[in-house]
Amino acid sequence: MYIIEAMKQKREALTGQDCPSAKQARALLRERAPETRHFLDDGAVPNNPLPILAYKAVVHLDPAFDPASILEVLFVDNGWGGAWRNGIYDYVHYHSQVHEVLGIARGQGRVRFGGDRGIELDLVAGDVAVLPAGTGHQRLTASTDLLVVGAYPPEGRYDECRGTPDEHARALKTIPNVPVPRADPLFGPEGPLPKLWIKRR
Image (cartoon, rainbow, N blue to C red):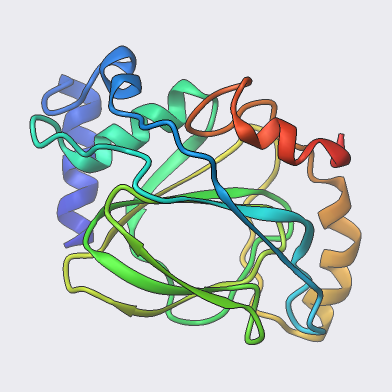
């Protein structure tokens, strides 16, 4: 499925077919305040003093467009790039040098955030979660059609950590240096993220 999605992504980028304009994508947003959750360092997953932002039913996935392209356009319009289409790994992992946004384009899944002692959230198509660097995440269950779009702010570098002691020690040094994005991946500079994450600026 993900090979097909990668091919569709390339075709849409080249032709614009099934892809909304930025204006059309913004019109599909629903005003929603995100749920916020904080997680403590559990000794394996460092997490972050900043909260995750969980937007429920925030994007209307209009069938006139490819659902993944709607999310990609919204993210890119707000400066979040490097978009990919896939699922969520079924093992605990985190990124110590970059924040990440996960948008559910299709299907549903139960995801644990914050490591083994974190919380479980059910995410469905149209939901979006924004994870500060260091936040553990793991897919627990998923429908067979689950499709996730991920992206990253312009500052930061992708890495994948799985909770080893060496990674944890390094992450405690890198996480505080990851800049706060200037824009929420959905609502831009005036959106919730710059206000809720302001203490790190």
